[in-house]
Amino acid sequence: MTDERETGGASSAVWLVVGLGNPGPTYAGHRHNIGYLVADELASRLGSGFRAHKSGRADVVEGRLGAPGTGGPRVVLARPRSYMNELGGPVKALATFYKVPPERVVAIHDELDIAFDTLRVKLGGGDNGHNGLKSMRSSLGTGDFHRVRVGIGRPPGRQEVADFVLSNYSPAERKVLPFVVDTAADAVECLVGEGLEKTQQRFNS
Image 1 (tube, rainbow, N blue to C red):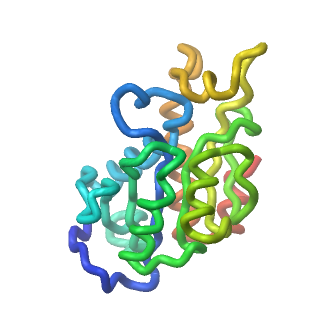
Image 2 (image 1 turned 180 degrees about the vertical axis):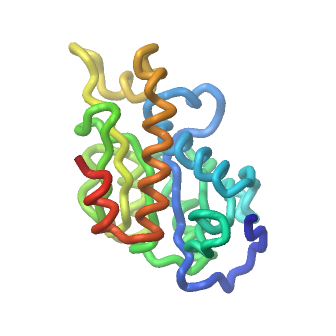
Image 3 (image 1 turned 30 degrees about the horizontal axis):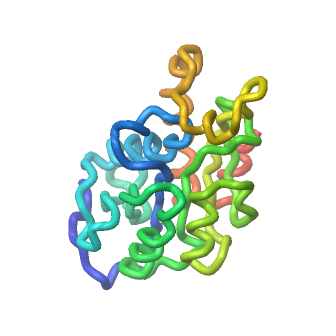
């Protein structure tokens, strides 16, 4: 089901879909790692597990997203092995390797200014204090890549933002989280298959 070939002569139609997060079990359940969870769901839909890219800086899955037999768009799913504030380097290396321009790069990330159980999809924009987006912008030389922004809401009370994003979801949120992840994965599929406008009409609420 998946295209496991790793060649530099990738089709110009390839998309690079990056799940933003921090590597390792310590961070696995944190709000900041929602990008990893969505990437895992997309890998499951492709029927393959992540494997090390030859650069040694990310784990990847290659395949076509969409209903079986439809010949959907070719994608490279990636989970950088670097921490959030340094993941731009691995993303740039993958974009260069697969010859993917910034406008076909998709970053899946947590978003403080969107309520939990809500998402938005857009092209370009600022970093809003997100170190992963900041690192990608610096390494790619532009912020004009697509973002699937998965809401986590603002921290309660006086909790510091850094503590909030690097903490686990609440028990109530964890019950809803599988639906959130599934919806975000649907949004990625729609984005690469049907374009930004249709995706925004369907998912931006």
